[in-house]
Image (cartoon, rainbow, N blue to C red; front, side, top):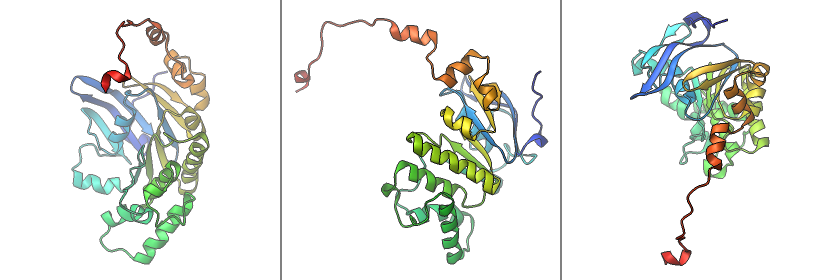
Length: 278
């Protein structure tokens, strides 16, 4: 049965017939999708398939070539930046490389969005806010540390604390477990689940990490060449009949790529030696 075109009232975030082109390249090809409130939606797919570009459209960091984006039933893709600033306060964004300000302490990183949006702030209230947000990610006590003093996993946790500083309704995660060992990755997965459970946050997660996708995703959507080719829960994705889906989730090289890799290359008789460059 064909999925009906998403309507503005179908979810907290909805894209309808979303198209994005960069020059002649089609990156998003008629994407209609409703993100359910209070759930974690995971977007998977090979590099360059449009996952991160799609997520940027949800907060209009990219504007569509065609189609529409809705938040709480209100169209937002055509709004002026001034009006978008108010809407973006309802979103937390956790970047792939954490994107902490190296010259600021952990405390200063977390209060940064608060100071950007509110002119008058109570310093004692800020102290309490930072303490609460860091406690949620197991990092209370690190307020005066600088990012350079933190491990990769600790930086991700501080970035999460900053992402919830303004009590957003939605958090967007771009590759939250990239570069982390399996145990630290699972810590991040548990924190994503904790924030959804305790704060009732809607999460959209872009990832290549299938262990993470299966653990945190209420719904997993696979993009391929700018289109949605799979959409369902973990069990549905694991057993999906599409060859491209199975190849991706199993991490296997396709036959065509494998054949190209096995081709013998040209062997040059002349070989440069280290002394040739002295």
